[in-house]
Length: 157
Image (cartoon, rainbow, N blue to C red; front, top):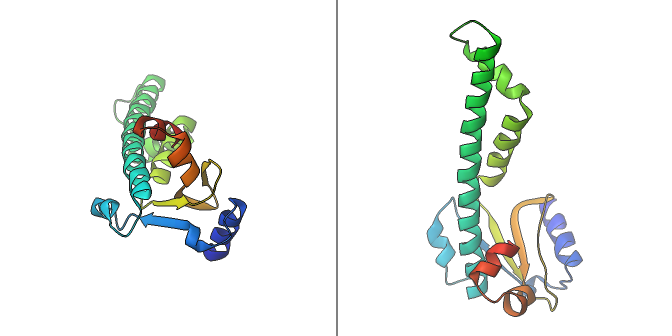
């Protein structure tokens, strides 16, 4: 279950209790939750910077998808004397294109609601894991001792 996976990840990060975790969830994409008073300032700070990074990554993915779409269409035109192609032909060519598929998958992974977890442990760490997608974990030690400003936080994330 997801709960068991979360317990495993938190245990692996050195937590002995859920009281050592502060979580901020994006609620249906509502950014006002990023200013929630229920979460600690450090968690809100991580969420604010991470959200900016995710938005920038999403813009990049969209740009790359458009570029790859145009490249594939151009290649189709060069291969054939036909001026127009059916939607099925274009779709088939796009799905066969590794680069186009890579950017489509990246965009899908970026979309949706994310969670930001601040872990109260004495050693610095920040990570994501495929077994719990769309969750960013960072330790209080990393945030309060190692990272000096928002630029450094963005670099770590």
